[in-house]
Image (cartoon, rainbow, N blue to C red; front, top):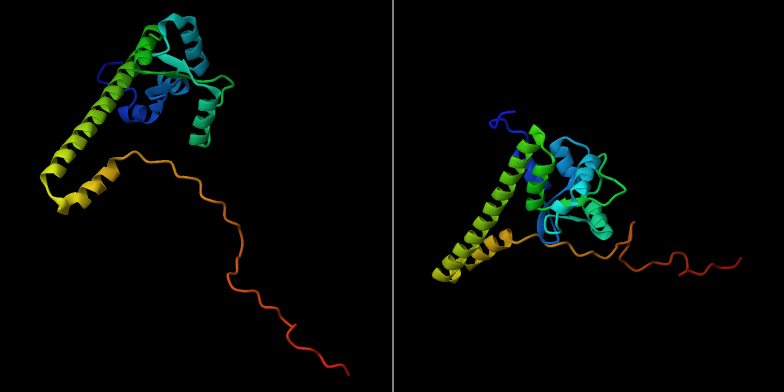
Length: 190
């Protein structure tokens, strides 16, 4: 493979980067798919070289984190329901993988992953710069643009999880008083 060939598009990698424990990480199953190896092969290589992966390079998800992750994705891809907890690799952990997995594809994928992490850092920095510029503009202009600035800030906020709404009963509900039929008249006896 030549360097001009793109093994994996950066957007594909960016979609797989997750935020877990406040760190941007890639899961072992996603990395294995990108490297075109089996997840167990990747995990075996990591376990054989455990000293290369300190906790800030790679960590194993807790059962609770794994359960939450499974719930977020709804249905799992084939092979993503391993009986073992997944490993989460930070940017440094992915770089360390390049020393273990040395196939030409692994080298090219590592380059693409590093570029994706750099691009994410640039996006975060530009978002901070945009927020700083909005602050300056807000101070500069008067109240007439406050609504516009508030709307822009709202769009920049991270989405908040929806609170659980109270369960509603299913079916047809009548909101008027119940009328008793046939009770109002008395029948004459014959």
